Length: 318
Image (cartoon, rainbow, N blue to C red):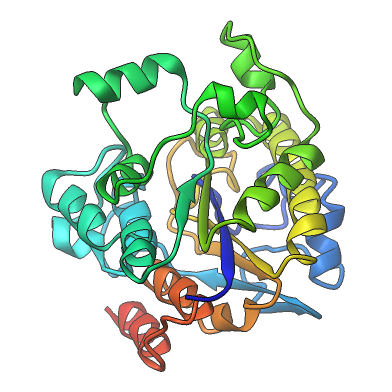
């Protein structure tokens, strides 16, 4: 297996309107993102945006099923390449059902990479009480954690956070500190550099950021802008290291939400899939969440050829 991919999964970020009263992307300071895309801002109807080493593709998150897309099915589709919403009979929120969990363990990206002889890791630092709950069987795991544990991936601790080898879910540690936990607060750029250094040692690295979905449900427009600026800084730091070490950085989302502060629910808007670095072209044909995992494996030298783009067209027709 060759190459490295750092997948940054943002929960609940879609492509929204150009209205600054609704969409926090409008008015946020995003020099890294817009710089990668020739000054363009990813908005609803923007089409495919390209830069010298980057592509941003509007991506279907509805998976051909009625109802608002949800996290459990969206993340499962993103991590496995299978239409999880169809498997479940419709969108499933928050925590994966047993069939979804079995699919994640059997076919999640962690499993795919490890089975092909590669190395995978989950970058998030888990709180001590969460690790205790997992050991005791009382912790309700989301799709990302189910996929990691199902592939035998060791979860990172606060000790690794202290060593600069993990990242808090909020990037900087500020939100975690407000919860009363003693962690170092770091600049977004430094968190990004740390993430990319770890990614350079692995074939597949996942980082999950879920505050975007929480702020979307709250309709917090200013808070959403601040979150996007933190993510932009994280991306700047990650690319500073990643591009010099052959790591492809991918930013993806499971469903829309944050981009429309006028509603408190998820949206049916397409989500942005951004790929930067040596393997960016593999993502230029992504049409559905189900196309992302095959594109990752293609970058790592384990692709399925033309099946990926055909799959995306089929899901858009469904």
